[in-house]
Image 1 (cartoon, one colour):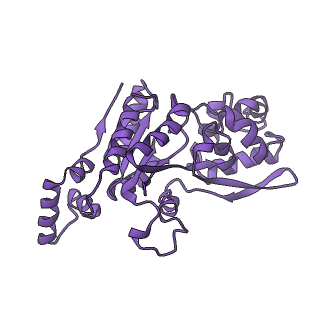
Image 2 (tube, helix red, strand yellow):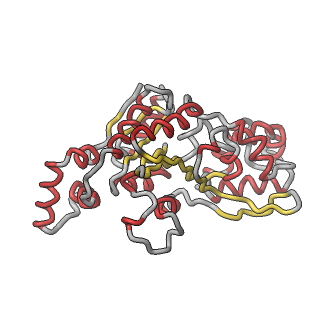
Image 3 (cartoon, rainbow, N blue to C red):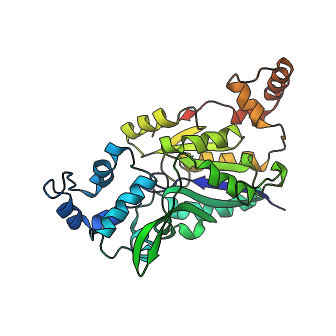
Length: 320
């Protein structure tokens, strides 16, 4: 039986080159400009990229429930007239600009994992909107999608049904690994996917907790930034250094750094025989262990285990 492993992805600016709502904003730009013109409304939005920064940033609700509510406000007053779950899924989702190489890479990495005797699944955890993600050109490669949803009645969006709190993404991760609801008890050895068989991907501050959670439990975490963009690189370093194993350009083309490090991580998972509790390694590295005997046991294991040594290295940076 193949060992089960998982790729866990944030969506916006991790799998995409833009926020998933951008095709909506481009389509309704004239309506947006008409409403947010500084006269009828004190806020001014003239370009699609300004929608979230202008309407959400000053209230610190640019992600999660705030961004979903803001979109709903503009649906209700007719700015986004006719926008439905179906339209997001069928019309706008396919128009979201995906990261370079991703359409070929995602199915390829899954197939290639079989040669490592891994049963690899891919999962999206996003503070965005599920129907938009379901409409992405790569959506059929996901085993699960955890994201916000809208209720709809008579062809109209009525209210926010569910959200994924960007700072509580560990809950859906636990459900994926457990194979059931997070509040249900299950012995770790009976999990569908062990945490140390997870490779996580994210791009920013809202991914800190989930990527660090994966890292501390023995999995591999990867932070990404816009290729060739020095400013975005420094932002990613600021937000994710210490929380991830690698910070790399957002380019999934075969043979590039992101591809190579993902394959290296999967090989590490595939050949792993170590059963030492990696939480002790993480606690040792953070100087949280207090019992002298436990410290000695953990140090001894770390000095002898190449697998644990590789996973305990500090963040490695790649700018290309």
